Length: 410
Image: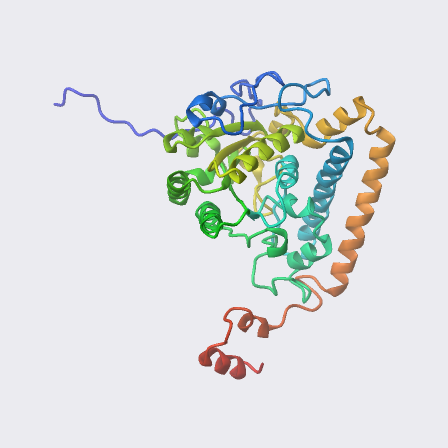
C-alpha cells in the first residue's frame, strides 16, 4: 500500500449555476480614481501590483476621479457615447435579421461596447488591429459604413470580402482591421509579428492584438508573449475578460492565477487591468499603452474586466450554463448608461438629447439595413460570383487556376 492518498483529478467549476442566485462578491472592485497612473516609461517590475487591481475613472455618482481622468473633451465624450449607441443598435438589428433567416450567424457585443469603441480612439491612422469577432466597435468608431458591414453579414454581391469569410468576420486594411479568424489566439502572434515588421522597417505604426479570456489557454498566446517580450515589439496585447469563453467560465483558462493580466509578469511585460465598462478608463489605459509602444518601450498586456451580457453567438443558449439574471447582477454596470449619466451630470448631455440620439441612430441603422437587404440576404437576392474565389489571391494567377476558372465557366 502506498503511504500517499489516492490522487484526485480537479475540474474547476463556477460557484453559481443556472437556477442559483448570481453572486459577484469575489470580484474585488477598487474605488474609482484610487489606482495610480504610472509614467509611460515605468519599469514593469515597479507596476506589478497593477495586474491585480482594476483601473476605474467613473464613480457610481457619475463623476470622473483620479489620475486617469480628464483626457477626453466634451465633444469626444459625445462622439464616444454615440459610437457605443450605434454599435448596440446595429447589434439589435443584426440579431433580429439572423433570427429571420437573413444570415446564418451573428455574435453580439452587448455589454462590451466600451472596450473596442474607446480603444480605437487611442490609435492613429495606419495602426493595425488583429481583432476577434467581438470588436466591431473598432470599425464603428472609425465611421466605417454599416451598409458594408451588413453586406458582409448577408453575403450579398456588395460584400467587400466577396463571400470569402463567415458573417461578421470583417476586414479592412484601410481601417487597420485585419481579417478576423474564428479560431481565436491566432491574433496574438499575428499582431506581434506585424509589430516586429513595423519596427524592422523603421516605421511608426503599432499593432494591437485581441483575444478573450478563454484564448489565453492557447499555445499561440504564450508563443506571442515570448516574441513580444524578447524583441520588445510595439504592440498592445488585449485580453477581453467577459467572464465566459462560450460556455466555459473564466476560471478554466485562468487556473489558479490571480488574474489574466498577471500572465504578463512571467514574460517581463507590463500588465494592467481596467474596468471594461468604463469608457473613460478604457480610453486612458489604451492611450497609455499605445504611447508606450510608440516610444519604442515595448509591449503592454491589458485585461478588460467586463461581462458578456448576451449569448456567445446566435448558436448559443447561455441559460444552459449561467443564471438568467447574472447580467443584472454584474457590479460594473452598463457602459452606455454609465457614460450617459456622467455626461448628463456635468451638463454635456441630457435625457432629451439621448432620446433624440437613439431615434437618429435607429433610423440610420434601419436605412443601412434596407439598403443592404435591397441587394440581397443569405436567403434571397444576389450573392457574390463564384468567379471571385479565383481573384485577389495571386498577383499573377497560376496556369492551373486559370484552367480551373475556365472549366467553371468564368
